[in-house]
Length: 298
Image (cartoon, rainbow, N blue to C red; front, side):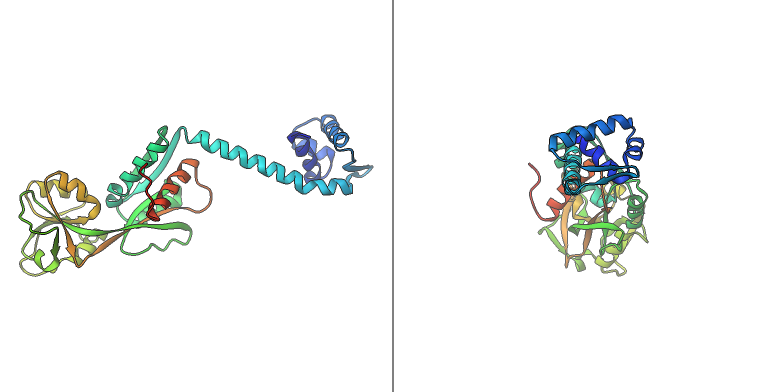
């Protein structure tokens, strides 16, 4: 018994006869009939009653249908598994990420992903709003999206996983005196700020963290968050950003303090429901590990 014989056997059932099965399977009918006769000899039973109206299953044939379908399903699953391994040797995973999750956790995820699949490439597009990120997943532009939000996005048609929650931190110019790694909100009064533009999610979070009065001044509003840190490093002013920027800011000589009481930016991962590419599935496995607090760094 071989796979071809089982395929022909099920084809006769599914397509309604030897002739239709031969046509659908692109094989000569004599060859198909011969394969079935060989299968019957090996099993020692007749599988079909040949009649003038076509072919009808015998009781033995009926008993073979379910096992035959299971064999073909198992073979298909095995092929997909092997194909997935082969495809992870090369290929591209398309991601879209907002600025803060585009620093972390994306950096750690890509590092862990390439440690496991060095032949894979990750293509990351940028987005500025949760809605833009979600639309890219819906349209198929990207398979996985990382976004920051003040609450879980309403996306019933997509899979959503909360990855982490990042507290906001005050980033101050190099040389700023600080006697603690935290700073209370009321002590932000009197500082000069360079921050995100009005209307952005980050600006909403920053406004909720600041205690505004006449001594709090905003001296620059930037559309691109990547422009904020150079201004702080140059001593122009202070800024408020998610904790994902801490290491970059500290390595640039800036002083980083967590704001208390805390205000958080929640980080979510969105992906299409249903089948993802092998590369995207592998990356989502790492993402779920991180969400569960598991170490994927090795």
